[in-house]
Length: 289
Image (cartoon, rainbow, N blue to C red; front, side):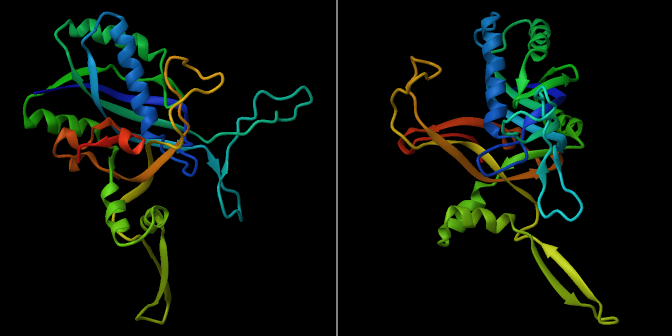
């Protein structure tokens, strides 16, 4: 029987939408797992020593990407806050980062729960008021709950409570299948993201109709799932933690898919976990599937 910590409808302002060096949109998976890991460490310090968050599922209810597209513009522009302003009213010289306002529910698989659950939830609420999620500020949230998935009815009830929402799952299988046919990684990625437009002449009146579609059906998106080391382990000047070896790294981007909760038949299908492949210098967030 799996125990789930359910954090429903967390409203986050100004979350980091720059998920990697080449993607803007839904925050990176490292941001979500990192925040949950930070929450676990705070609870461990409060006396819940055996508590472990082993997996995280994210259900997105609403996302407002802070971008603007004017009349006649070809691309979107980032909506900058422009603060603080200079004394003369001009904007200060710094690079604006992409932001989004987002409402999500987190489904966290827990281990090590032989203690007072009410006390845990009370302390958890205090930490949530101080925590940042994906670099954004938590404005409000509904009361957290501990749910024991002892049968199929409880699972279906949890999925119904996540509606309406989209759950992000990994579709690395699409990348692997495409690369096995000889394409490189970037071509495989763009092949599933590109929108194809074509026109057809209708049977009645010879009217031209435009049709647009993707390679496969589904809400396929690029998603940043971790990092790959590009240098050897060592030390760098002014590194944050002098006790931990330093390594330069770059983002790992693959494909993901947003699906409705009713398509999740087992809770493990939506949970993301840490995975380190030290042989290939990969530090990833991935799913069991």
